[in-house]
Length: 463
Image (cartoon, rainbow, N blue to C red):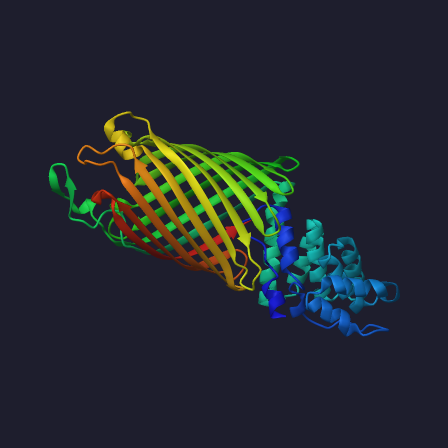
């Protein structure tokens, strides 16, 4: 029973539309939440009811369906038979049969929330969102246990997320938090660096500085269908980080984007135009305008592949020598493993280049580089309310020219590790700690640094 409840909401909160969601939920929710609820159903009339019930609870849906099919002529209309027959039919993709059987249960026993939940899930898998939403709301009105209510919210969230296929939808999130940053300016810990003129001392502003911070972030998204499987998308967001003492390093970002999403049964393609402005200590520091494209292909119920292209133009308000155009191409794989922890692993490789707008030596030294990198990720559910997320990245950058005071062009290796725990008291909230460690290794001491950031953050999703 606990295992059934634990697997009831196995769909990716951040995910492609209905098909991917349906496949994951079909594979992941054997008896859904219903086995946690309320009164037993009435007994069979002429044969042992325990056999069919056991097969369903043990996940033997094909055998359960075969057994029920042998007796459907005799026992259709018996609520207990129809209940387990309906579940077996739904789990073996006979959705119409399952719906008819479960509807018969509710005709005979309209107060059975167990049957109503299974019927709601059958409607969901069949794509009948209106009826699914109605049945889920009916059970919620009866004040079900908290864990069951949380799982219902996950289904309602999935319904809302795929609703943008046929209606305009608005979604987004607000996130806030705070913590400690060991190196607010990503600066070296050295007091001096070697140059062609000899050692040069560094001011305190160019050295590692730590501080406590608070942060606020939010984003809104509007999706509007203009044709079957084609949506226009608009996004607007902002974030800010505010330090307690070192407020000259406060940062902020405002950005937005507009594009389109094309979807098919096993793939989707999204293209966006993005623009944003980065602020340092309250003043405009850098503008960016870019294009990005994402292609995602479903390889199976558990695996997806992706390709991406990003082209971004940067313009700096006070450091024009850094103006540049960055392009990146990436490809990745994501796979969900069969386990009680529901681990999802991902891997990605990317390469590209940043090209300086200026042909001068200093621009070539600071903004002209080749890039190659790899990323890996892991997510797993420790229990129904706690999720672990981890990711790692390694990126190599080779710059074209040496700076005015240095004899060699920069070669850098950047490593980053992110670890987070999410407590999900319901489908909308995520609360927990996050740790990020960064290490930049360079053949130039001026650009070597380590940085550790720890924070507690809370995020609320709205839809």
